Length: 475
Ligand code: 5AD
Ligand code: SF4
Image 1 (cartoon, helix red, strand yellow):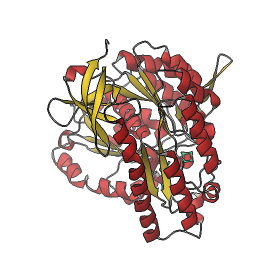
Image 2 (image 1 turned 90 degrees about the horizontal axis):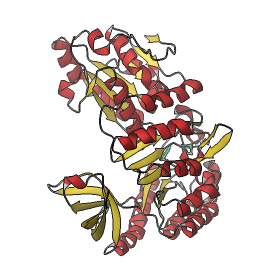
Image 3 (image 1 turned 90 degrees about the vertical axis):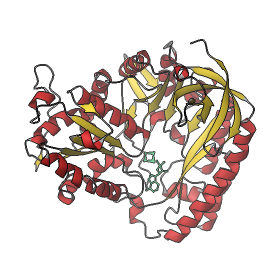
Image 4 (image 1 turned 60 degrees about the vertical axis):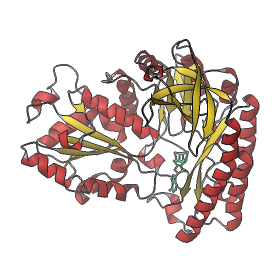
């Protein structure tokens, strides 16, 4: 096994990935994504880096000679799930070898970063382990792996992280942009919530320059995007200095609003501590900024919030939501909540339920606390037993649903602008999102994909609305 040093990508006169490939034919790669939107976005970048070296992307394992698993560490048992997923690639690898190929399995993302060489030790099927800082090196790493080496590239170098993000903006996109496209503006997190592995796997907060963000935004919109979702683990902490000017997220939203064909702007994920007055005012003043906010609360108990090192109280969260609603009355909110954090009593859980009852989230992602090695939460000796966590999770989910149902039901009959993003599951059906991020299905021509139509909501399902198109926009 070789741990390679940072070498940077080579430009100009480099060996072509395709012709250097021992199979003397165009390579095909499957890139599978697990976890958060950041990973979906990163998988797009991985595909672009491979694509710019002549590798085409496929969803068919049978025709691929490269498999990249872009992993996420934030969810429960993430590493174990990836190990079992890797195990299923044994047959594929054997078949490709038998056909004279040199199949490569690469593990990317946060599990790669966290486990490093351990992955190679535990799973001999793996050839390359690459952390989120080094995706531009993946074509190089795969070429070296074809020569029989096992490689781990998980070095952290802040300067390179900037560079990688900026270079990603200049990588040619092989396909047309999605109608709603992701754009990473910030990576990493300095908050160190005691349950969370992100500060360890993604490293410190780093922001892209406004110039680089705006350039990528313009390219995505020129390629067909009509909505941009600005991504970062702590996106509302965005801060950058360019030409002696301080930029925050509100400044970035204002600059992006000037892109004529861009219709909608969203951002995720935010921390309550970083919801600045400027950003709240942007929700009032910037019509392209959609009235929806994903704002993890994690708990409604101040005692647990303190133990989680969240740096906000339940009351701070409540008042914050109130201020945002004052700025824009039609705001919808979603959240993340963890039940069963070490030491959580029945009273703490009640406090969480009270917060959920009071706010009325349009959706909530609920999790049972699970230990992440290396985080302070893992060391706590007052871990909650599984049946208690389970019971609280079910109770919380029922509450979220009970609060959500009337909110959705009251929207039925109203007309909302829907930006259509793709075809639906049924013939003649198209799917898009309302301003408040609800999925809306309607009968309509696929030519309307990429356009905003006024849609009357006709019925509400658990996770989406059915609607009827009233009028298409002039775009
Ligand atoms: N256990 C349970 N949930 C977690 N999350 C992050 N780490 C853990 C953990 N150790 C949840 C948080 C975060 C979301 C993305 O995942 O709620 O906001
Ligand atoms: Fe994790 Fe907390 Fe940072 Fe969110 S803010 S990524 S939960 S450490």
